[in-house]
Image (tube, rainbow, N blue to C red; front, side, top):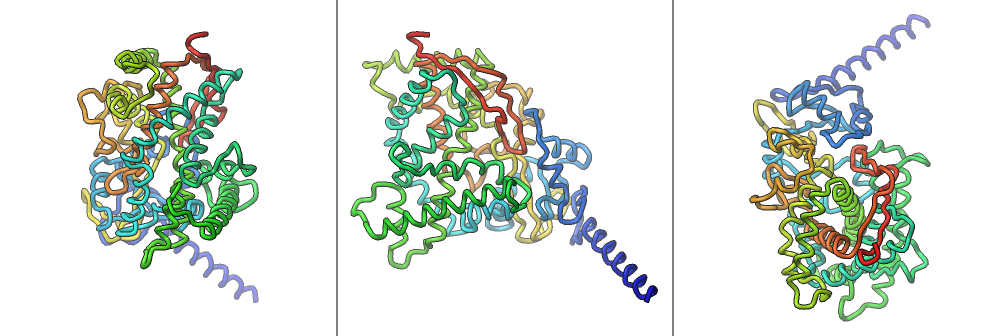
Length: 474
């Protein structure tokens, strides 16, 4: 009996050893980039998720790029991946979207944002959904939104100026969420008894996290928030079907009409995931970027001075100084757009972008196997001293004389290729209008340090607190 158990234990040990060997030495029809696959299943996920208190390239990426080069292999979230800090490979992957590569995110993303979220859709369906989104945040729609965004922003700033202090990240997130929720689903936070924003509050911490669905974990809190939000949206869709309006009053009405068109390719699951994703994306990323922008204004008086000159110049050139921002005035904010681009470059709101190889692909002597993920790391490009002089220094003037494009080989703060974020122009408008209202009508003082960390996405763990006062009485 003992010899049988001994043989069984030996076979088990051999099996485990072979499994670990195969894990650490994956098969490839070519040469894999250097790197370590680390532990089976877990890989290097814990090291990847470790907090970073600097604005520099994440330590996880920087350390391995120094050791292995700009392209290396590892395992994250149970998946075999190639991490790219190489601008040329990033550009190549973006250009080959739908041919050699396709958008593909870890299960933690898809379980939270929905299996049919726009990031997981491809081909004609992705293009169709993107066009739907642009009816809400395209240029013509934004032109109509501009006066209302300015009005809401000024009203909120006036309210905050009566308070002893304001936590800017939470306050701006609430402001933007209330505005977009009203436009998307006609939700009025002041009249509703349901605080739907609380469903989304923990999402940024759970999107890139260990997929442990255990009470108390970030992932579990996200899933519960999603469950409540989707139940609310489902009930709303059923109510809209009962009381259809002839003329759409919000984006939800427009989506419902698309659903009911004969032969429509839109499904209820895709429609609800779309609304859910738009509610989340509209406020979380923009409020983070906006908070960082105000932090830079507080820390860099020269940038504040130039912005003040630009925006006060807009007021001086008007026939009626309080007539409100026009689209032409918004488009004339040259330095403001440079400031926003520089903020986005250093913010690196999206620390990584995921693409899956559809077939074995050769690049610079390496093979990217079919089925492997390519993890594109924007911070490694945005903070590369060979691309940007003194990359950790906040310097909006570095953008002078260059096209302030939403994407290029060396600037991917808003994504790249056909996956460029559809809400980019909406986010820029929100930030520009907020800056205009803030610096032309108010003064402020920072309270406390307001430190930012990256874990791996941008966060303000202790908030960013300011005290506001109207300029006339400051």
